Image (tube, rainbow, N blue to C red; front, side):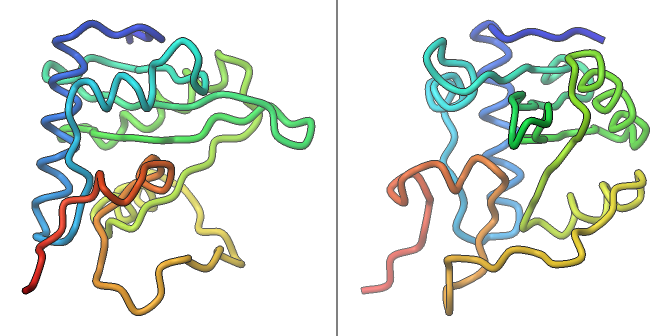
Length: 159
């Protein structure tokens, strides 16, 4: 499987299209991804270290962020599209281990992604974190959305 920290413009465009479509599928507020936003959020040379695994538009793909937290080498699943290959998450796990990660973490508000990860053997955290969004409509967000300003979230304005 391919892995890169510097995807090309075609990959950025394919990721942006897939991420926006996934968010819009439920009709809930979601991030309006563009190729520039995907590049800035995940692959900026001055940003967090992220790796694209696979090839967007051609095969399953994922983005993981790698780093050290409390002395443990961790990979964080940021985006994931298995495109009909539920075993792809095992490829992501092998890639994370190959990058030196001892632990693979992730979270989602999307029921579809939650079900796919649980089916692939992921476990829920026994004491899940609480959200900072109280009394708000359902949001279709992944790990990256919390790091963006609210102006990046597509919402319906009611006058």
